[in-house]
Length: 345
Ligand code: NAX
Image 1 (cartoon, rainbow, N blue to C red):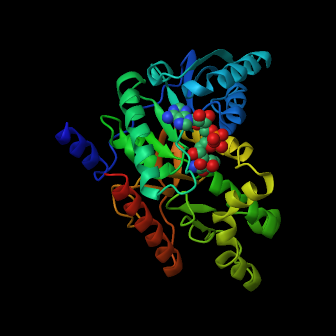
Image 2 (cartoon, rainbow, N blue to C red):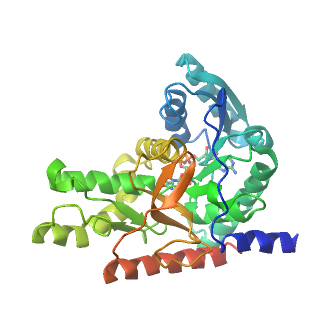
């Protein structure tokens, strides 16, 4: 068992294994959503069932997983989904059993995670979540389709995804974590600051962890964009960075609840681009760092610029990193290494 664990961990240090092609002709595509009674689940399920994730002709079967205590809420979500009379919605199953949720799943979106309670140590949070994601990783390995693509949303998302990917037999390249919400926030702020003309060819990238150490970057892959004015450069090197990093906290302060609508939209964007292809666009995804061209050490799930086609992602090359961006990326790397240690890997 210990040998198995070590060898799974080592695969994260090797360049990614070839990704199994994602089939394009599934009569019904089965999607498991964990934490489905939560606020993101409630916003996400109807978007999937409307065809926004897998295309306007793909029927979907939803498997909604949540804790035993949330089964009534889950029944209500199921009723509402059926009441939407969505033609692409083949079926909705609700369960508290991961085996039921993941058996035969083609895709899985993992929102269910243990939240940080007041007074809880960071290590306790990491270890509690490690237990959840280890168990779910094993069930996905044993029961899901071999081509199953897994997106971890529940925080700490990158480290939860790392644990899932090391929990045995999963191809690490089929496991990712969500930084698309941060990416979309950056895109929105760029458009607000520069307008459509100034924003043209300006590429947003999120590097690193989905946390306050994430590195929002508008310059490294923007050589085709018009140069920034001195004022705009000062904004993007200054205020903009904490604005993206703290956007979730700001929404929470104003709404009294964390981001759900924009998180669900970002999850749809992430999975659609991964599976149907990003059509040459560069997007941010947290993926295994092995083989990356930017000097980030292997053995982490780290957010990079990527392009995707038919279920396969590739690192987007050519980013020119300033010393400031490199320093910030190193800080995010250090945080992820610390989380990995605290989580017991
Ligand atoms: P909610 O608290 O509304 O819902 C979480 C749901 O997960 C609850 O229904 C709970 O019963 C369930 N759950 C807990 N443990 C579970 C387990 N072991 N198996 C199955 N279900 C379980 O949170 P919500 O706002 O929906 O957010 C979900 C997660 O996404 C949180 O961890 C949150 O921090 C994280 N986020 C991550 C983002 C990202 O960009 N990576 C952005 C949005 C979001 O904040």
